[in-house]
Image (cartoon, rainbow, N blue to C red; front, top):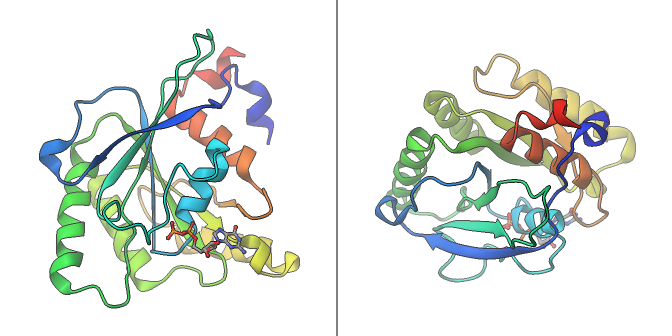
Length: 219
Ligand code: GDP
């Protein structure tokens, strides 16, 4: 991706878990630009965040009790370098559990919508879609939510190592076509595999640019 060579900031190497936020009243005051990650349970969200930060177990899988219904904030560990970007990563609770009771889905929706709608420091949501399954009904509902909240979101395909190489580009284009008319959808879809480290640098570049829009001109 050309963008990467234009950026003067580099993706932080060291990250720490800052806090888990179980409800709106515990949300920290707005600080650095945030990018958030959303996706169905099991989409590969924890694996992707771990691949991005280069740490094996920063984000825990959705099987970890307790953390599942929280917004988990991760921040770079300051190293005193001049080119440190201002950034926080927010791992949103997974959705679409097969047996989730209606009340839990409603609570998720309310909490997430309140966060999305009220958070000026939130620059982009990366919406993860399993490349094997494509956009499911609950993914569409979350896109409706993002469109209503007017928060910019970018679709990221996960687990592309699980589909045939020849199917990756058609899958990407089909998803791009499906979101074409959605007002808040970013018109570019990334294809990634945490397992095979594909598309990770491109996603890092997209994160840096969405959090620090000036940088593409700086370097
Ligand atoms: P989460 O529930 O969205 O956080 O998903 P996880 O990151 O816990 O991953 C769910 C399952 O998918 C685990 O068994 C992972 O090993 C697997 N997985 C995650 N990313 C990839 C990938 O890029 N390729 C493959 N083949 N499997 C993956």
